[in-house]
Length: 190
Image 1 (cartoon, rainbow, N blue to C red):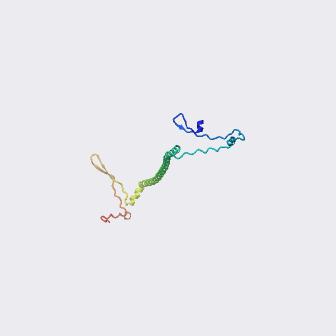
Image 2 (image 1 turned 90 degrees about the vertical axis):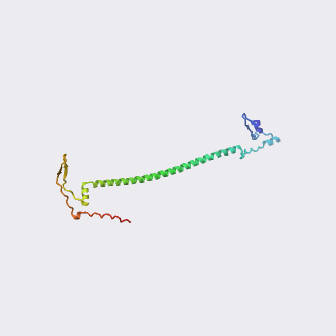
Image 3 (image 1 turned 60 degrees about the vertical axis):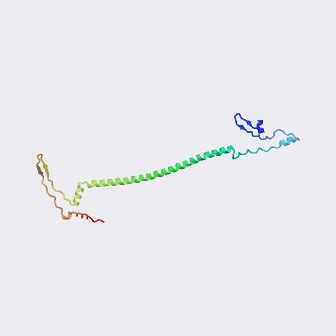
């Protein structure tokens, strides 16, 4: 302990050398004798030791702190860049999903319209295929109903027999005959 008070270096068990720090002065607590010059000076309190000085900018501790800060800065920059890139990526992905969802909605609406159109056309075909509708359209086109039909029967020996009596169709009245459109004129280009 005496070496710590004097400020001489002490050696540790390893290879490092530690320097001793001077011990602070203590105030005297023993009873003071009167009339003694020595006792009067001892009774005065000694000033407190000044605070330990901060290491200089070139000290190993400050260099260690700046080295740790220098190594930490790229990592912090990397993490912030990663967060910003992730946020932007999510924004772009969300926008693309929204656009595709809008297109899918529009295509579904168009498909529904086309399905309704197909259903309407199928109903027209079904309605137009009935015998009553076919007869009406034939009359509108100027056709007349045929009379009883006759047909030929071919025998095994190659002989032909007429069965039934063929009756010609009745001529429509002139007011019932529809007017045919004029044929297109050939060679009348622009």
